[in-house]
Length: 271
Image 1 (tube, rainbow, N blue to C red):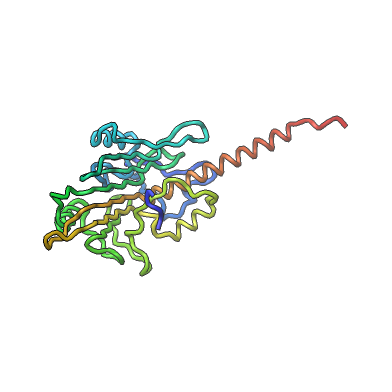
Image 2: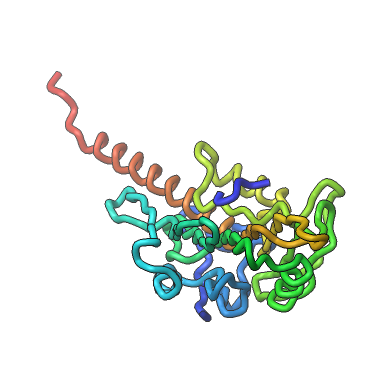
């Protein structure tokens, strides 16, 4: 399982820099021919996967006060600063509702690849498990029946056109394990290594939602105390990670080429 955190109708360019072309990627990672439309993908509180960074920031600002919003960023090799995560925080005693939004790593355009949400119920108004599950089904459709899932752990899977998928895999695999998303490429791994690894990894493609309910028994009723949600666009995140690593490799190759050229232009010492 990948470490958990660890875009409205816009086509995202699939990606890649000079050394790796789109046709070099296995077909299982290819984006829809018309691009990825955020409007077709699931959302959490109006935040859609594949939404642009700017759209996500605008929605977050409409939902939370400014002092509850934090944006983490990193400085890139070219000196530019890129937002990596948009987080909200509130006083969670006794109730809270927080969101984390993961933005992909460059060079691909900045868009949302993962969203997580934590909800802590008001102790005096905790909803029943049946009520929460019915609400989730109304929004996302029928959950998957897969190993390890049940009334307190639910999972959904879609393709990049937003169509539900009922996946199959080894008996020890569950789509509930696939809703964590890594937004940057693993260190020390080349593109040549990444592609076969991601090809084998069932969690490196499609779109996943995992919902974990923490329940209590109150007066004979199973009620929900906390809800943990994790939504991820794994196909897009995989393309982004490969493109990011390819950009690093291209930059290193260009640097070495320039160093060689400089060396060849140096005059030989007087003999």
